[in-house]
Image: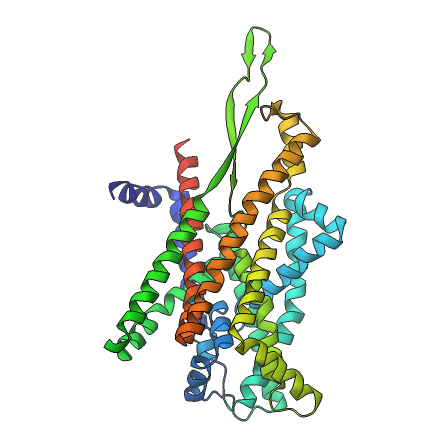
Length: 422
């Protein structure tokens, strides 16, 4: 406990780190203030009832940082930007030029890559915003939504989505931690007092065993995420001795720490972003006739079928874990860097053999991480199918995101403190 207080003291005594932390807090306060500004023409009672009875809107509300619960100008949240990022990451597989830009062109390449993501965000925000407004109008939540009001509201929420994207990028650049993850985290945390008050209001002693079960599963998720986030597979590395005049350099031994879960919480966010589309389209087409009505019923049946939905959710998380690890971690580049610096893995020849060895280990540990992450992601959905309580399915995913973001933030703060000491 004393160590924790010492680190907190160091955060606020270091000028650079203090300014970064205060910038993050200021940006999140601004985000919460903007999230409380609603668009006009809302039936608040119908909105609350619709969100409470719709798992899809509950997840979307989480991605919007709580902005959807009040239909604020930030109701789309970071959803369009996350979807644009997924599209750009997928394009790196099909385009060697984009892959080289992302992995090899350094800071300039990453800036261009981010710029393309921003450009794609605008049309995605328009499509998602229009579909969401259309669904809300059909549910009677948005009253008197004329063509002019539709265009005005759509313009406002698209601008709000771009604004929150900009705030997130400012947090990543001038603050500490990942801006988009922190925005989602802030929305989840800000909703905790409301959830606690609702729980206290609806508390039923007869459901006490269920509450204990939910608490146990929540603790299991927290423990599992912490263990898998901290787990590493060390690869021993030896630096060859180099004689320079009378001085002998190298000959030291160290290790490469390969994380079991290289992708963190990103696969969960990616998978949820993809799975939101069938629900959004199904709700938008509800009430139509003919073939469109059949499509709507099929999509909504898929969403309501918890086991099929959970299976697809697991597969998406599993695949996105592999995909994101492959995009962000390049064994070939690591092998080349080791060889250039006169380092080698004992018993493994430098060059292609080292690359194959690292790929083999990375595949094994990524499989473990992907299976675990997928299992933790679908566990709340399975609990929902057993108990029939929808809120837990959303709360489990939110808990997973919160724990991962907190761990990542702690690591980055400790890294900044370590740099200060050096």
